[in-house]
Image 1 (cartoon, rainbow, N blue to C red):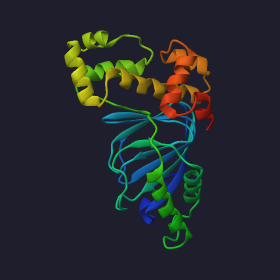
Image 2: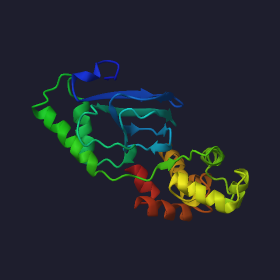
Image 3: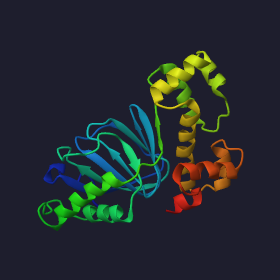
Amino acid sequence: MKHSSDYPLEIRPVMGFEDDYPAGFVDPLHSHERAQLSYANSGVMLFVTERSSFVLPPRRAIWVPAGMQHKAICRGPVNIHTLFIDPEIESLPHECRVFEVSPLVRALIQEVFGFEPAYDEEGREGRIVRLLLEEIERMPNIPVMARMPEDRRLLRVCQMILDNPADPRDIDDWAGIASMGRRTFTRLFKQQTGMGLATWRQQVRLMEALSLLASGTSITNVAYDVGYESPSAFTAMFHRSFGRPPSHYVAG
């Protein structure tokens, strides 16, 4: 098993490594000089940046730009393949995103992971790396991100919802907790997060649902745990968001 500490990253523009983490592992806030592409073979991770929270479900990938401060939290045991990519390569994404992984991209990641440190940049290995970077741009994002506000009053509300996505309080309740009028709360929340409270909370519930489903929790229990009145209501919401039912999504 190769780890990022085993080789100097500057050997080649793209280097691949594998890591295993135990449940509850926390990698504190840090950044890398290189862009990071992490593909979760198994387990669920939470990535937290200064402005957003992302869930990385199994068999999906996350892109973290070079220099972006982020923290990683393992919801359970995790096996992950990570590529560190030279930021000097042109047209790399500048935003953090979680995306679907096609069979081709999955196979390319596995190939790059197996390369020797000093692989031939002009030969087969180099062509595979270039194809992988091209294909990553084509992969669709999945809605597992919640942007965090800067206002401390709103941040308190968001943290409470993150701690308990099933909390049933309505917008008037949350505005009161933030010591704001409803209109001011609604306007400022949308201004700072890019969406209304109901949509933001749905994103959080989706993120929590993916984590629970990946850990083996039944769809019925997940539905109630994230605040839905019935499994059918949860399944309908999940299908609208991801284009497939929760059982199919987690099964890959």
